[in-house]
Image 1 (cartoon, one colour):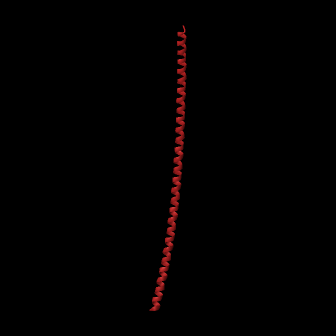
Image 2 (tube, one colour; image 1 turned 30 degrees about the vertical axis):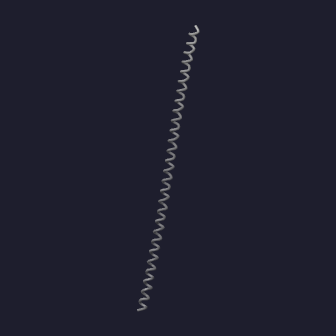
Image 3 (tube, rainbow, N blue to C red; image 1 turned 45 degrees about the horizontal axis):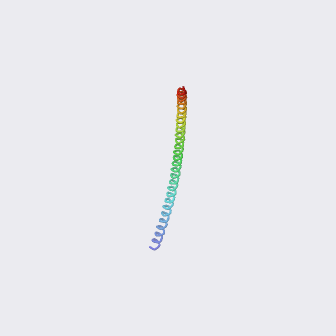
Amino acid sequence: MYAILNVTLWEIFAILNVVFWEMYAILNVTLWEIFAILNVVFWEMYAILNVTLCEIIAILNVVFWEMYAILNVTLCEIIAILNVVFWEMYAILNVVFNVVCHVESF
């Protein structure tokens, strides 16, 4: 009876030991696979977000410089037009002033 129970207990312990190590191995592999997958997902998301942010910054940079160029040209055109108008008005007033002064002198 003792021999039977002794063998049975050792067999049970051996089976439990094998089951434990098999479960440990399965869980260990599974955990490493999960960590590896999460690591890959993290770096893929980082790469996507990094590219997206760089693209957004590049687009905003281009838009800024395009707006700057448009506004710069527009301001220069406005200043040039005002400059021409000023000198035309000056020339007209100068002529009028000279005519008036010339007429009054007679």
